[in-house]
Length: 96
Image 1 (tube, rainbow, N blue to C red):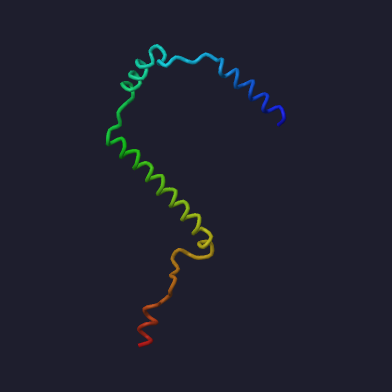
Image 2: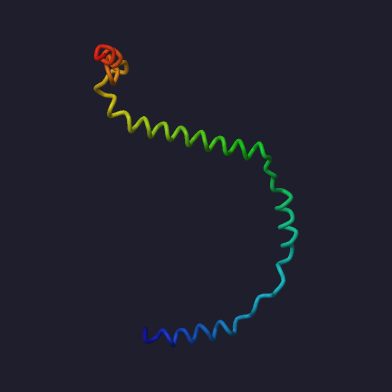
């Protein structure tokens, strides 16, 4: 830290002596910028909607996979045809 001020003064003096760059843009800069603008393809509304639809499909597929992963541990011991409430209508009718 003691030599920091000394080094700072040396670097500041060197920076003051450095030549300043010109204020104008390099040769051909405007032509290159104009060429890039004309080459750039314009997006049609259909392409934007297609890109949005693909993102939504990927999002829906991801949500389905997450839901399946969360539900998988609960399906191991149960049959798909077992009702959660067995004979609920019969119990309601017989209780009348």
